[in-house]
Amino acid sequence: QFPRECITPEGLRSGQCCPSPTGVARDECGSSTGRGQCVTIAADDRRHGPQYPYSERDDRERWPLRFFNRTCQCNGNFSGYNCGQCKHGLTGPNCDQKISVVRRNIMQMSRAEKQAFVNALDQAKRTVHPNLVICTRRYQEVFGPDGNTPQFENITIYNYFVWSHYYSVSKTYLGPGQASFGGVDFSHEGPGFVTWHRFHLLQLEKDMQDMLGDPTFALPYWNFAIGGSECDICTDDLLGARSTFDLNSISANSVFAQWRVICESVEDYDTLGTICNSTESSPIRRNPAGNVARPMVQRLPEPQDVLDCLELNTFDTPPYYSTSSESFRNSIEGYSAPQGMYDPVIRSLHNLAHLFLNGTGGQTHLSPNDPIFVLLHTFTDAIFDEWLRRHQPGDIVYPEEDAPIGHNRRFNMVPFWPPVTNAEMFVPAPENLGYSYEVQWPARPLTLSEIITVAIVVAVVVVAALGSVIACAVRARSHGSAEALEPLLAETYRRYSEEDRRLDKSQSVV
Ligand SMILES: O=C(O)c1cc2cc(O)c(O)cc2[nH]1
Image 1 (cartoon, rainbow, N blue to C red):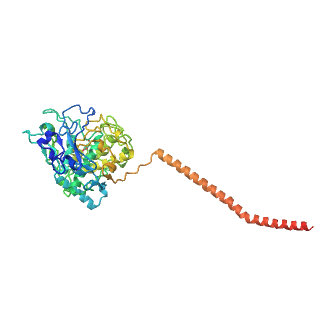
Image 2: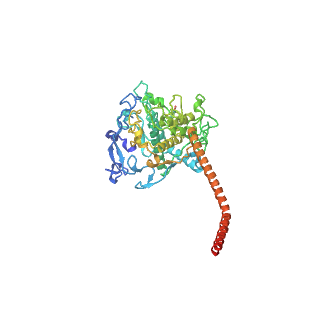
Image 3: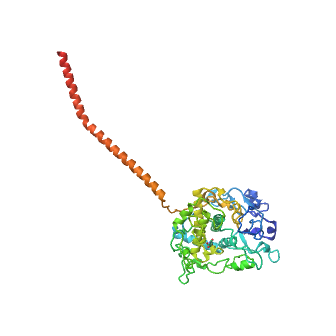
């Protein structure tokens, strides 16, 4: 969450995190070469919804001001915590060379491409994040027992992806002996669901591009809207088949059988007031379609569900929560029906895909430990991007206030660094964020009124065509008989004319 350079006791006390990309003095944020400058952080102070009734009890309020109040702001195409990197989709020393980052359906990738992706994920699981470290204590205890030992740890690239999701959904610690407050979620059950997960993926993709030295590397997606009860990507060449020995485990032939999860001891963190750290524990658990207690989550969403939610015109509706009706966001998130109606028993689209996995991938504090999370969310993001393309909403439709804490338009998404607002991710990706999707959306069947309209138009065209064919035929016929008569008429006319002339001559002789 924070750059390694910034978490010294002095750095934390200063509230400033503006490293230099060159490490040279007086070059904060690469200011000496015009890359960026150190600025005061603007945090959202608009009213939030009633779900979180506290103030000053959670480090994530007005993120990231509890930790830092100054950050790098980069110019032009420069980006990153020290402005030493390029924006997504750009490369070169001046970040002015465009490259294409295209997210594709994993099922349509070649065998070599699939293998390269699995290898890249596995490398990310084992590679320490080059820039970021995580805090393992609340701010109150972040300077350590001696007041001078910041409580931060290194973490691998993939585990950082898992940890940031955990940190955004974790409960608010209210003190020893008191139950932690669970009515808070900085990345779900609100309009920020789509924008938060979009940035979450963008950061992983960027970290993997840097790790691979390949700025064109793109995360693929899993089209989970295929109906039925088969997990088509749960094969050993992709995300791992089911183990033949244990229904809930991944086959030993898959590299993911070796992966161990982080953030498993959530009850301990919540009672002790600690935070998940980088310690790995058990293997991933997964039993697709195996939740016999909840038959509703034994099937994947249908293709029609995607088409239905894309038709919803309103991005989000009050109370901008998991109870919203007629909200595109609540439908794609999956707390309401794909057609928009809210019903507490319904689970659809994204939520249904999570619950279908029935194991690590179905529990919010753990779910990114199962790498299917990445592919499930790229598809969710593809649907969001298609909705933005079709409805062209502009940013005013994203609520400025009264959304649950963390979800207002100008809120800096927790726990990302440098600060990034929900609004910055509420834009079509190809034009603004440097990546795009290659997707074939299912064809929409025609509605009854469309069928009637089409039938009427076809009938009118057929009648008109028939009418003109008949008219042409009639004209051709009458024209044809006149032409047939013409030689006779001409002959008759010639004979009469000659007769007239002869008569005229004889009369003049008389
Ligand atoms: O119960 C749900 O609807 C549910 C489970 C689950 C897991 C997860 O990781 C999410 O991101 C969302 C989610 N919803």
